Image (cartoon, rainbow, N blue to C red; front, side, top):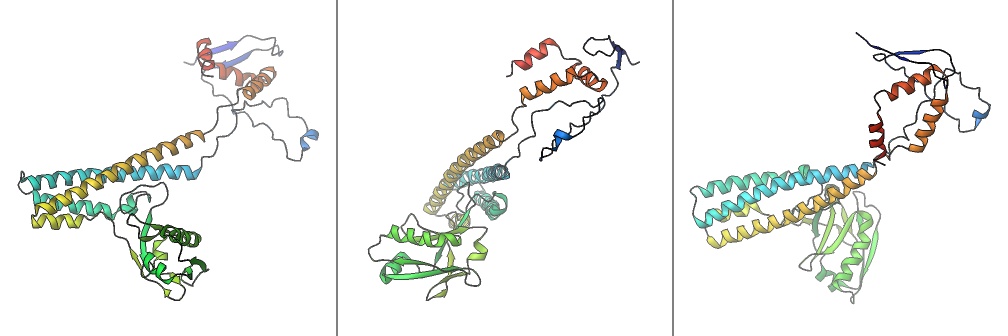
Length: 348
């Protein structure tokens, strides 16, 4: 049975009547506050009917989250999931190689081959499962993963031998815009690489010296299919590109296991340990990127409601004498105790 709650007449209301409100009666939906036209025509607009209540403002709409930040969070999380899987498989391979070297487990060769096949399958799915942020050497970067490649006949030695010279590059199936670079005899290897990098960067290709001092080019993995056969160099036409192979070669580990050569097995074990170290570094980098992006997303969330505006609206609504406003106020205050108000104020 529903229980009736009767509010006594109030002097503030001034109505001389009694508000009868059932506790199980739904609160009516209050009409929206009329908006003010941008041309300021509200000054001559007719007044709202007396029965129209003024709704309380919540302090503004929620801020729109940056889709780029959300994408960073998703890619970092996907990269971490992939790296965890690779790390687990490498740890298992490490154990199998150790057992093979020690000769402490029967059937270690078959187990090793099975683990190598599993890892090779996981590495093949890197571009799909790695969040587009892990390169072929399992290095993580917040930027999209890149493909390293070389251009046949375009190395430091040949460039220095032909200096001084001017080379023009184009990237694109129809030739594309051409960019030129001057190679001088007095330039260092690093200077040559920087000059090439400045020239090729607008076309989506970068140039670097690798850890052996050799010239290497880079392009986004997503752009690589369109770039690899479309690079033109003045006087040579379309040039041949060659992908730099990944340092991780699990197939070689199976061959070393088949030979049973202890030195070859130790070399495989060293490569697995080095790969694990790279994966661990990438896990730390991906975790840091995830934390940073998550913090930015949290900072972009809607600000706290404007308490001043809410208080003003509440005061205006309380001063109103119409039934709708008083009904909204009494419904909102049902169950609000002094302790709850103090607790909410303490959050400020």
